[in-house]
Image (cartoon, rainbow, N blue to C red; front, side, top):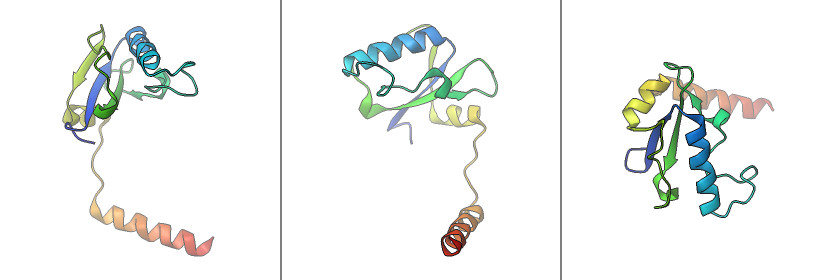
Length: 111
């Protein structure tokens, strides 16, 4: 996930998000918008911990059509760094990754 492969957004208006999603589902011939969707359901996007009403979401650029309109009220494009800062995400420390690998091996042996 990079700025070159994905676009990152902060959504503050659920109605605009639903409008974007519905139009995108129609353009992609996803008829019901439930079992197959272009974007996640509003409640399945990430809650912005700094602004409890806003949502964060990223979209793979290869899945974006020219007809997708991100210029709706309450849709703000942000960069990856801002997106991760808003999520308060920190990359895992190498030692923790090694520990996770060891725990997975132990779990495989004991099951």
